[in-house]
Length: 292
Picture 1 (cartoon, rainbow, N blue to C red):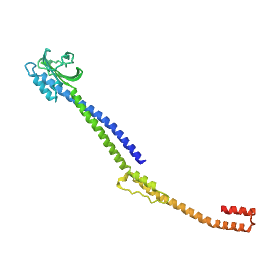
Picture 2 (picture 1 turned 90 degrees about the vertical axis):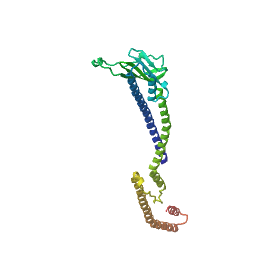
Picture 3 (picture 1 turned 45 degrees about the vertical axis):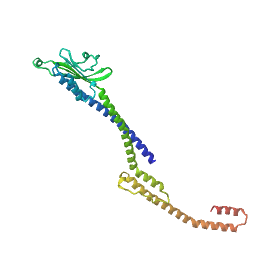
């Protein structure tokens, strides 16, 4: 019974641990993905704003694109898109792998808000982040608009997808191992916690009317069951007193009944001896003697 309870307790602990681990895993993966997206957005804004402040013409944009790819930690430059156009909308530079079917005119370019000071000083570049589907792939775009140029710095989200896939594999491998260890720990701790119950059960099974000397030693590890163990240890004493009272009553009753029964038996035997053999009264006395 105790073993079955321990097994159910371990299974329940494993179930609750599994649910908790699943919730933690999904939450952790979502937070990691969100942090990576925020990190990419910050980097795209920074690069787009910085490049929009450069003069668009007569500049080595291919080197800038390579440096940007290295800065973003991209192993393949094809996962980065780079485009520079001047204030009139003329394309100054774009990546050699730029998709020609991608219309940049449909993008929601950030529009600076004009003020009186804008007439006398250069406006700071305005940036924004947007998503785009290019040839069936998801891209994250950083757009910057300034007095000199418009800049697009885009990164393929498959980079994050590949990283997240690796993290998911780690979670998939680690979660069952952690769950197994937690289940094993729950089994060990439940066995240790229920050990006093097992000793109590074994001692109870050994208690009989002729053997009431079973006791359980109390140690420091059984603090939660101290009261129960004390109650069990006091129980045989109460049972023994009850059995002694029962035996004493039985002995007294036997002693009290022994003399009158012996007298009654002697009188019946004498009455049978004084009656005629085979008479009805002798047969009646004989039946009464047998009952006595």
